[in-house]
Amino acid sequence: MPRQTITISEPNHAWLQARVDSGEFKTQTEAVNDALRRAREIENGVEEIRARLIRAEQRGFTDMTPDQILEQSKKELRKNGDL
Image 1 (cartoon, rainbow, N blue to C red):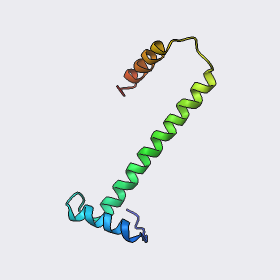
Image 2 (image 1 turned 180 degrees about the vertical axis):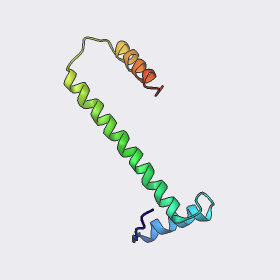
Image 3 (image 1 turned 60 degrees about the vertical axis):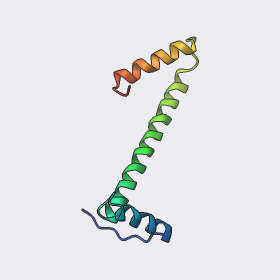
Image 4 (image 1 turned 135 degrees about the horizontal axis):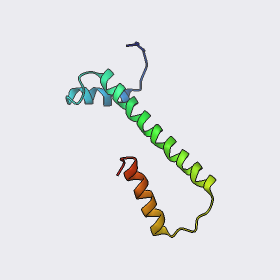
């Protein structure tokens, strides 16, 4: 695993140490890696939403009712295993 040396602010150091002291993580490295993983998950989610919005804008307007749109969205989520 690559090693990286970083400098963090005192509040971030205290937060990391508190996570280790509480037993949530064994090391500060684990806590940093978890925070980075979560940040990537959020970023990926934002990118997915952005892509869906672009696709929706490209499709243009619809004659569907709000209930029909909701039902179609639910079907797509079920199909993808997200609901």
